[in-house]
Image (tube, rainbow, N blue to C red; front, side, top):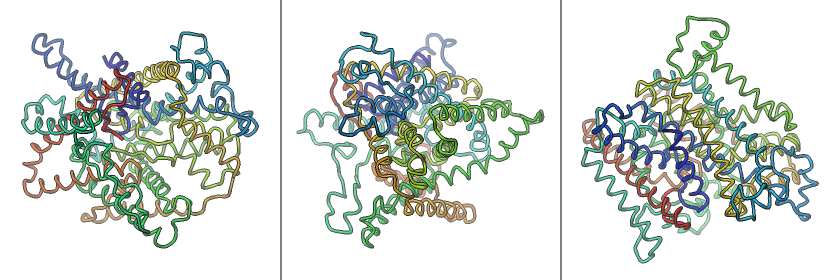
Length: 620
């Protein structure tokens, strides 16, 4: 059932992208998967009435959910939807004016991309089905190569999650806020659909999105705060220096974001909006003291990147015992009980090392030097661990880290000239899964393990199901998206490739020296994150969380900070005046807000895809 449901889900995600409609993978909880689970739960309830022994158990429902989440992630906006335009871009857009052929194309491994002009013409201009001609054939090799690369990366993530699962879930007892709604929807003990407060929240969010959707069609109908197009931007209202350095500061409130944030621990939600405001104050301060003319000042992205790396380091340190057990397992120690893990620790260690080696071989075949390749893969996996930890503990709606992948940090630290031309070419391709990290697959894996634990189902069965879903989704995604670009022309979605190779051109034409401002920001971000962590472990009253510092400086957090502030205030008041007795019924109201906006968004998104026009899109 999970594999069958991947087909409509992948199609919905990719054709929403084609028609500039729904973008469910831009936030942590994918609304297409939640709505699919709602349909399956409803059908399952009806089936239980007439054929009880045919009905799915909770573990089976959650396995389907986890498969769809991981499958949706690998075809998401920051994965396949960026990868294909990057892979297709360079040879078609090379001109005598930009002289890319002499600058870098002659040094580019041909098997990474498509060089056949007819196949590129079919991709960009043919306006016909994929299989109508033989021009699809040159696309098979890069599709299989990059699918294999993505699958290997995801497998290494699964091996790493095997080491973290017990520490994060059973020992640290992290709250996993993102999966609380699927758990509630499938709970055999507590039926949230029977609560009036749930339906009040559902109706409120649904009506808001219905009105905002009709506003897009009939502008005479007023919009409401949740509507993205309203553009309530504080930055546009401030014109004098240094206050205008605050930049883009939207004041929208999204019902689903308010609902999601309600399941975040109070101190963590506080840290998210507090540090967001602190970043804004830092921008104003930078302009006031004259730093405004320096590129990228005050280097928020670099500080956030360093914070993520530091959190990854702490996660590795906290799981050192399980890593040591893995080493002992490989050496023959049979006393270690890993029977309840997604895979034996020895397999996970061998898989992680072997997968890393395969990724290094890929880079070596592409003529990358050892250290630039090793540094990139290691930093990427560390960021992956940090994002997974932040999701498991914080439940942040977003964790994007726009335009600050390992390739940017390495070139800022050592300078493009020191990295070398051949390595920079591969860094341009790696932009395809490092432009941002909103649809990162690793946190969905660890959340799937949490769901398996809650349902009492097999961790190894869940791990196998998620990897099968990964492989099928990658193949489906490449086929569906290639066909869509053949039919509708790929040039309208080429901006991600333009970003990547324009950056490569900048590196090669103006190599420059190490960016000492960026290096200083990286060092400061590391030191400040260590300080925040030390204070939290030493003083119970310290409410500032390092994960809040890491996620709060991102582009997407600007959209969601007002919603998190509203939810934090509501939760604080509920707990203060009603205590835990009031929390449980209130949580059904906020779960209704999430599901109500998700259902409305799915309906508008489906309408936009079927009508081939942009309808209301509540997501950024």
